[in-house]
Amino acid sequence: MNFLTFNNVKFSYPAVEGDVDENGNQIEPPVIFDHFTAELPTGFVSLVGPNGSGKSTFMLLAGGRIMPTEGKIWLFGKETSEITDEEKNLLASFVYQNMEFETDENVFELLNFVYTNGGLKASAKGINDESKDLLDEIKSVFELVPLKDKKLNALSKGEMQRVLAAFALLYGSKSVFMDEPFFACEENQKDVFVKYVRDYCKKTGFTVYISMHELDLTRKYAETVMLFYPNRDIDLGTPDEVMTDECLEKSYGIPAAMLKHSELMTREQLKGEAELKL
Ligand SMILES: Nc1ncnc2c1ncn2[C@@H]1O[C@H](COP(=O)(O)OP(=O)(O)O)[C@@H](O)[C@H]1O
Ligand SMILES: [Mg+2]
Image (tube, rainbow, N blue to C red; front, side, top):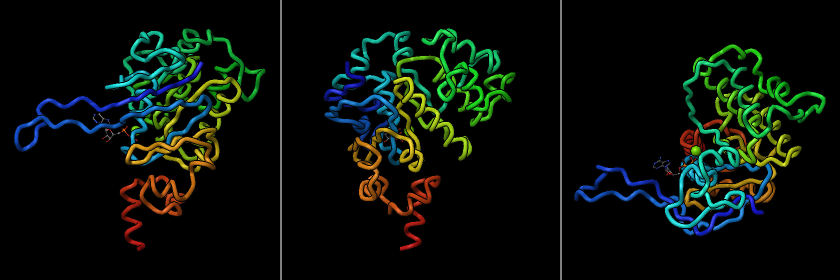
């Protein structure tokens, strides 16, 4: 069975009421994807490309969180519009960029809850060390012990991201879509976390789609890269195939040499830099 199929998908966000041009006519929102047909792979897949190139929209469509305007999407052989909410979380969990929770339970209570009530039924072995339980390993890798008694709404952004990644891996769904899941974490943590998620995929056959700004980590760890272009073209292949200087320059609109050293800067800052140096 195929993991993920897009068939002739068209998508635009809904028109905003009251959003009118100078003649009072409704402004139609731009089409984000059009006639998009693709067969997408399993494994550890990294989505890269400049802001606004469609990475988040692609993941929301793929994970069945938004529906195509036209065309169809199948996830694990099921059409996304026919998957119930309950089934959705077991097929594809989602780590959004901004998630908020109303709960009084602390981090460890919630980790236990997720591990017990998801697909793993509180029984899985560690990825790095099979003699360990997965829950203990994840608490250690994502540095969760210092957070154990804290409530979710008392966490900093980076702490929250560590907890959410742990939830995603402990829930035991068949795949997970993570939208810039580690942007607020420290550089050395990002490397450890991305590597761990990649190893988790390799070891268990789990599929993770992750968008991130770090081209170096993508090159280092991704099995497959999706490179998004501002015109909504998408290249798909291994890091070596897709992350050529030529393709990166075309996607980001700035020289590849600058991208390599300035991945933390925004595209606007980089453009400013590029102009200064010319
Ligand atoms: N909720 C929304 N409503 C309207 N337009 C949106 C919304 N979210 C994203 N867009 C637009 O869709 C395009 C793709 O955005 P997005 O998928 O968020 O890109 P990326 O994740 O690569 O930054 C952009 O032009 C963005 O402005
Ligand atoms: Mg995004």
